[in-house]
Length: 373
Ligand SMILES: Cc1ncc(COP(=O)(O)O)c(C=O)c1O
Image (tube, rainbow, N blue to C red; front, top):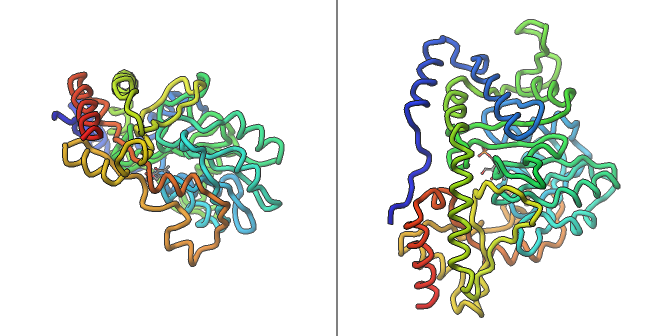
């Protein structure tokens, strides 16, 4: 099978990298950093973007900019990458692990409402695998309880909810450009916001507490250095030009793949809300019903891998089952769906959907053959 490589660079990356090298300004103050901040913010329909070193520090800086710290609780899904929760703990607040919906893989708004206490300051939604969490319900809950709604959009470059791009709904949103993401420069991240005050705070906390109009050695906030570099910006600008075409291709191929597998009894694919008008297709997610399929998730994963189809058997545990929470304060709401997904869910990577139609037909054939065997 001709599985596409990821990531892929061309002559445009080379040209822009060379321009950065020739500029003698390789770091965070190369004009390409400001350019990619403008272009990516506009792409996600936001006013401001602050590029940073990765999609973990973006969450930490975002939480600092929102004034979240000791004594506060932040509601997070029990299923995500670890940074969604560690960022909360690293600013001194307490993550509250909350269950996801059975088939969307996104945080369950009903469970969110049950997890709210007097300490709750924010809901940090993750758009898992690409499709947005139910931002309408989450915004209603946030408004009703006086909470901030924040977005970890590390999976959702280009995704939309009723025409609104991921990242444009919450007070701020965090994106990752790590090597495996649908938009990458190896490492990198960006926080987007429509709020001028938040933008100023993001810039200060990611740049040693500096403020515009003062010298290099004036520092106003207890901050750190999370700056992006010109070299990262050169790669990201080049890759951004490819994103629309890649999303179109993945969408076409995902439709083809899922249509071909519609009659397989025992796999439930991610339920995508009809209000999700565009999906990055970062992950093709599914859950195995062992009784119906006649095969466990682990056996399914083994068969696909042996047949050459890249497949990941989900996370090995919920976020709260990571050993670090034995020594780090957190609160755990009952999460039966998250725990079931650990046993029965899997994903296929986005780059598989960048293949040609023949590959998609082959992959569907492999899955049909393996589950029938
Ligand atoms: C949901 C989510 N949030 C945050 C991150 C962290 O991003 P980075 O690897 O750029 O630090 C990731 C990375 O996989 C992620 O999946």
